[in-house]
Image 1 (cartoon, helix red, strand yellow):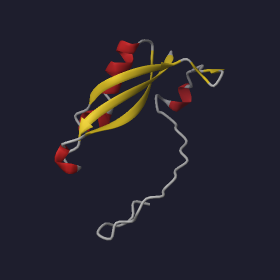
Image 2 (cartoon, one colour):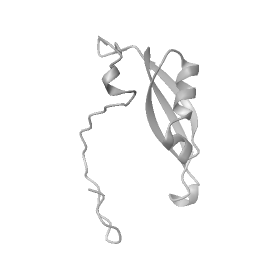
Image 3 (cartoon, one colour):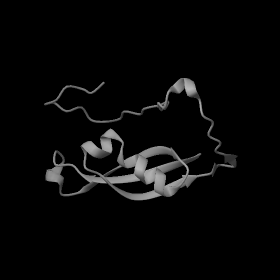
Length: 99
């Protein structure tokens, strides 16, 4: 099993009437590029935003460290991602804060 980054594009009608393409990256565990593409297309966000795949990257090694995926049956197929957020955004006077 390998780790893939799937770069997805979509046109969000809520942002500037969908004129410009927005992007999101999805991480997928798969055996091949083809399987990674197919798995990304099953992601709920991919389907909700009517995305398309712009590109895929297989992540084998980063900064001299090999990426080694090991199945953990206790996760029951779920992903676990730790996030450190930087929120230097201007607050909107019209909308409540998202945090």
